[in-house]
Length: 147
Ligand code: ZNH
Image (tube, rainbow, N blue to C red; front, top):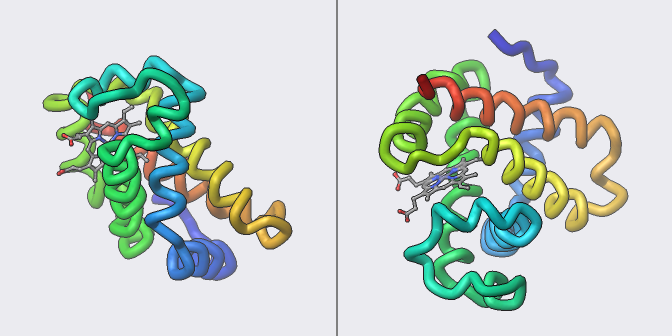
């Protein structure tokens, strides 16, 4: 089981208690689709993803970005049981959506970058370490039900 220090717990709950989901979620998913264009293949039903401008202005992308970011809330609430918490979502991504699990890490890096840009100097090394540790544990949990 993953061990969390009190400091890590307070950093992570602190970030999510101030999270601007409507801003960070769309920006993070847009970045993922622009920087790693092969991730667009899962969103063909979302309409125009022709270029960065189109992706940024795509309401379906924005809505899904918010949904995915809120998907992290259940991990924050269940930090001592993250693998079980994401078992069902892992099965969904594997068996139904067929999302290559390598992409989870790519999106999590985009979330880190957008959160860092928003927090500025407050996103210090200790904060980055705790936040990336949390995302790495979620990413690992999301990949667990792949065979
Ligand atoms: Zn995912 C869906 C989360 C990543 C793709 N997702 C989803 C959902 C959620 C999530 C919550 C919803 C579900 C239901 O409805 O039930 N994701 C998530 C998370 C993550 C992710 C948390 C990490 C971090 N995804 C991802 C990626 C991708 C995806 C990377 C690709 C690339 N998802 C997806 C899809 C879907 C989802 C496609 C479906 C959509 C629709 O249908 O609308």
